[in-house]
Amino acid sequence: MSGHTGPDVVVVDDGVVAGRGGEIPVRDYRPASPAARTALLWVHGGGFTSGGLDQQESDAPARFLAAAGTPVRTVDYRLAPRALPWRDPDLTPHPGRYPAGLDDVVDVARALIEASGGPIAIGGGSAGANLAAATVLRLRDEGLPLPRSAVLAYGTFHAVLPEDEQVESELSGILAKWAFNPTMTRRMNLNYVGEPGALAPGYPFPGGADLRDFPPTLLVDARNDRLRKSGHTFAAELRAAGSEVRETVVEAQHGFLNKPRKPAFATGMRDIAAWLTAHD
Image 1 (cartoon, rainbow, N blue to C red):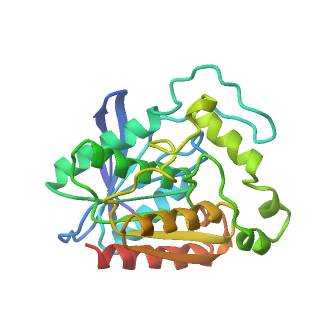
Image 2 (cartoon, rainbow, N blue to C red):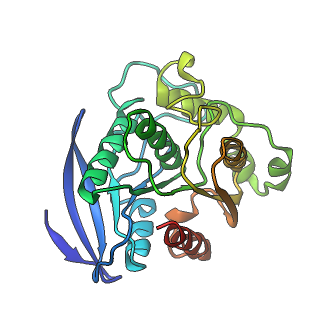
């Protein structure tokens, strides 16, 4: 592993974790003056088909939180094939489809738990929020320590996008009114799992699944984002399962953690940092 000091006085190291599907690239972000804080596994989004360690949504939140004292690991999980949102996906078998990416995140979580000597925190944005939530379920069912807390930003959690008239009425602008419509969301989900029969609650789609013992969870959604329907519904499901839940809505569109120079990024990250500190 080779380290360097970033502009936020954060030490960054690239490495790999041995996973069931091969070596998984990871990146560790450590405060220059380390403190005894719970490590966070942060998972980028990208519709299950894009993104990586250099993606802003992966790198910028990790740097922000490490500069605030939280050690962070990001993960370059395997990706499903690219697909166009205006046509049904090609369902030819592909090695990056479910459960490949989730297996990678679970394996990195397991390694981070072992390295930390105890529970971690977990979080992610968009598709990464889905994978983070699914990893909690996998850790629980595999008898591993559950995270101290979870942070789920503008996530997609349901195989079928829930209805929410209030969210729909608050959408503004051509892009927000088109993006993540029910047909588009179904195509994204189908491309991820590779077969219609897998479009159901469970590990690929934690929404509607067994959520018992889920850790305290912060959901950070964007107001002008149709996926807020999924986040709001998932929050209600977590509460029904007995979990501590906080919801916050940022005045922005989907993916605002991918734009670190915008005010919405700082707004969302301050909420996330405060949550992690309170649940350390």
